[in-house]
Image (cartoon, rainbow, N blue to C red; front, side):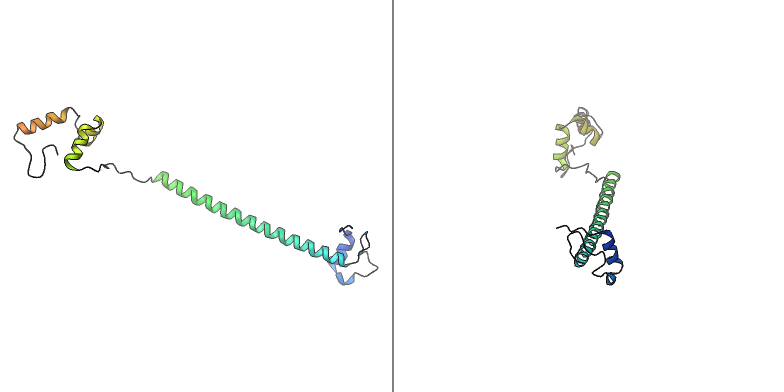
Amino acid sequence: MSSAISYTAYMNFHTNPATCTEGDDTRDSEGQDGLNIVANHQLIISQQRMYLARLQMSKLASVVIESITHATQAIVEEQVQHPKPRPYHNSVLTGYGWVRELIDGHPDRIRTELGVQQEVFPKLLDLLQANGYSDSKHVLIEE
């Protein structure tokens, strides 16, 4: 059984279903009556509605994806232009412990932090002691 209808029968029904009569070209090749045209017409309308719904969902999905893309791009640009600051002085040690860490650590670090090379620092301490400087009640001379 074929569900296809003639174009003329479809157009007759679609434009004015009340004018379709038994004698009109409302029968398909299988001899089904105009009710088949109504069913096909409803099927076409249903398919058109589903197509439009899918189209709207597709457009909505595109808008959502575009919004997410723009938000992600804005976040990345912000991170590149204004990176999170990294603390420079991040040693857990303070006072004498920090100075010992500098003396025993990488030579470039003591030069960066105190402005003297690793070999010069002990000589500086000796010079200070030779000129009468000594540890105070709460602070060692190394600090």
